[in-house]
Each structure stands twice: as structure tokens, then as C-alpha cells.
Image 1 (cartoon, one colour):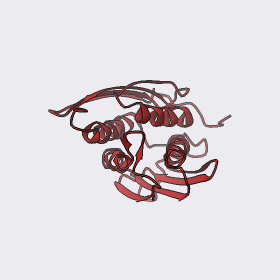
Image 2 (cartoon, helix red, strand yellow):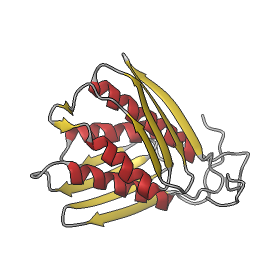
Image 3 (cartoon, helix red, strand yellow):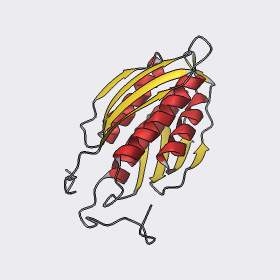
Length: 203
């Protein structure tokens, strides 16, 4: 059980992104219980988004319509962008831990994710997939998801798949670790109530 003091204000947001390629609506509660409602048209992506909600203990509602008749690229990237916007809008960085990290194994696979709510977008993504697809889902699109996320959440994010022989296991460990690192970073620190976790005084 966390010893962090509860937030005085609800850490929630709703964001919509509408383009000629996609229509995305995301609602988020950073102090949730891991509930997910999702309609993306991409079952494997939905499975990964569930890992973020459950392991991040955030409640997420995601409704997405995209040009899947072309391919999944725009839908995956724009969900990442909109999720980043929603977290950025919901999060007051005063009093948070700021940094989060997690190692997660799944059978033979092991991944590490480290996140910093630095205010500076940056992605280091080191994943060598053993295959290019899971079913008919192009796993290269996960890089686009995380790039879109960091650009709009304004975080520094390091993702390393340390080992793995099954690409489903590889990506699932990444998303579980991402959820856990996110949970740690946005948690309120009872020793820093009212304090921005930076020597600069702002993030």
C-alpha cells in the first residue's frame, strides 16, 4: 500500500484528437484502479493498453477510429500522442516522485523501462524483435506509439528489451514495465508535499 498522501484535486483529463486519418478520444484518471475501456480496432494493441492501465493503476477509456483499411500506423501513433496529451493535462508535477523504473520478466523475456517527467521529450528505444509481426500486427509500430507518447507527455523514456525469444513476450514485458514505471513516477511523495522535484524549481 502506498504511503503517499491523496491528491487534493482529481488527476483526470479528457482529450480528443481528430484528423483526416483518425478520431481519438481518451479519458484518464491517474488515481484509478486499473480499469480499461478500449475500442481501437486492433486487438493486440488493446491487450497492450490493458497492461498500462492494470500495472499503472490508472483508469483509461480509449475510443479510436482510424484508417485501418490502409494500415495501423496512424491509429497506433495517434493513440500514443493522445495518451501523452491526456497524461500531461491530468498531471500536476508538484509533489510527484518524477522518476519511475521497472524490470518485468515473462518467461524467457526481460525488459526494463525508465521514465522521467522532465518536461523534455526524449526516447531511447532498444528492442530487437525476433519477428516482425504478432499475428498480423506490425511490431515496429510500437516505436511510433512511444515516440508519439513522449513528444506529448514531455517525458524522457528509456526502453530496453534485455532478452527474449518470443516477440509477444518481448512487447508484453515492455508494456507491463512501462505501466509500473509510470505508476511510480506519478505517485505523490509524502516527503515532497507541495514541492516540485527539481533543483530548478520547475519541470
